Image 1 (tube, rainbow, N blue to C red):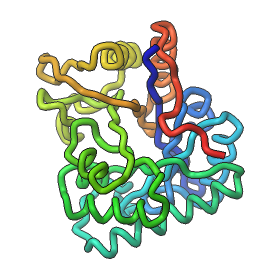
Image 2: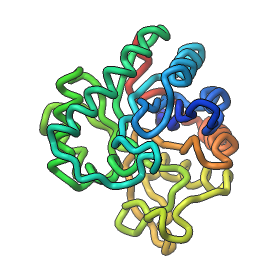
Image 3: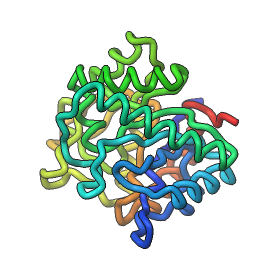
Image 4: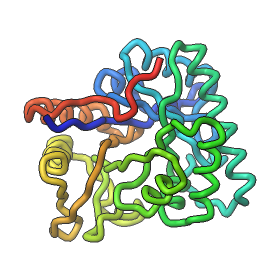
Length: 256
């Protein structure tokens, strides 16, 4: 039976500012990418989300980012390797402490926003992130953009790495994400999204933005928690996959 992981970016609320519906998403996903405070999230809110993840037996990962709360971590930063490595170590360590207090542990690392996109092709910054993860715990799994050079680079450095596809994003014919600045980059129809991801799981293809078919190999599917129809989209996706007898389970497992 084919198996796939469903993940979402959670723990991104900050004080009185609410972002997404963590409780509802945790009813659906198998892995939760938890903000570490650099692009979003505050300690109390992150801890609440971690405890909720424990209650639902959802795997937990560190959603590390550039220090950019104003830009929600979506602005490129030309940081030194030393600074980036230290920043990632700091964020993983902070989440590890909160996760332990919540009764769970961090199983993987998924970079956020601009950092995620940059290290998919920037070898220097990619190596800085890989070094940080390995320094903390070399068994942590790195989540990377499907088809990116980062996957093989991480593996060559001795770090386990899995490929990820995005349910609510459009793809180019080359298998890369359409820029958010372009029209049609973000998808909003839950049923369309669900059917696209079922095809991806079953035969490894997606319809690109120009109507052509592109091949993508992925071990996990992300539904962004901050999109307006995120919960509805995640529910529709899970339902379609289950009806097709696709097993849903975390790629890294739930580590006690």
